[in-house]
Length: 495
Image (cartoon, one colour):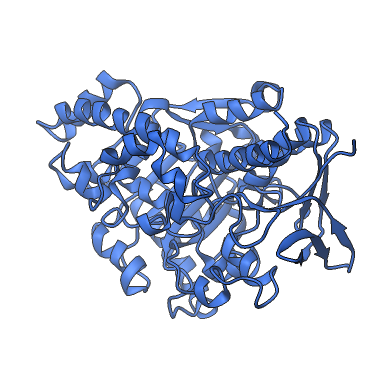
């Protein structure tokens, strides 16, 4: 019996996970990637001997990644070296700093020192959010391919834990009183590109997951995970074609039959998995008129995450600061409103700085370091002319680094640099509206109401990545690969 052929469009984390699992199960897998390296937004940026991760820098729920490799008959530690970070990160509020750790008693001491009278709230937070996590996470593994899944026992049991109508920030008020302490457990909303005052309370799971399971770094950068997955795909007989662009999804009688490449070559398959940015793929790969629910017009009406302004700086100097650093605006809520509602650039910005070489010196030449700066900004629905703003905003970010961090002399030590602005995300990385974290994660775009892993509008067509269920973030993207590969395997009776 001939192997069933599966074509995967895009070699991001979701496509690679699905490819790894399906090739291990005996499917004939071919992954098509337009770039000359794997990873998508999880790829490496190489600049004159300095290595940066393009996007994700936090690895959480490392056990899920281990599970994916185990399901492919492998051990993660045979492919990458993972290091746990303590403290997890530094939170800077201007007049004081907070360095959360995963040791419960030590964490309570740190809370009590900075926020007297609030340590007991940490025990309450861990207890209640553990219950939420244990009820909610199994729901994220369900495919939600039809409405009956909304009646599953797991979801019905989880409904009280959704905290419908409440926000992440509001929910933290059940545990803590000071605003800055609440912000210390709500900044994680940026992982899914949302305001903590709007992000559903169910996502309080994210800070719980950090505090319960820790934050990790992969030596060489998180991009090494994608290279490891590519290696497994190839070890199992699958193929990964780099530098090849898919321009069209081939559809006959409502079913995907394959893809067309920019060379004119047509590849045919039994199943097609799309790992490209969801809205970009739907608005470019499907011919006009094929899609109804996700037509170009309807896609424009969806809600999308914020974007990011990125600086990747290779320095000839090292700085003694933690691996992960978040610097809050002194007008944090106004900054959030500027990003999501006013859609303008804030004078008083919040930003994230990664100093990965403090953990992993291999990322830079000897004596040097890599500094990765992420500034949340409005997506491209905003009337911001980035070609005009780019140079001035770069200077503003560098000035903020010099004024608000230990990187006082950073401008003098920059040897190489790269800037990615919202227009670059859209035009160079094919991210719809430059919305770095994909479709927003409001309740109307979660679980059953998010694009399904088994694509609703075209047969034999499947989705993986942040734009489908379960959503953005590396652990959930890996889960999307597991869900989709599992559904394809079930279709053909493969275990």
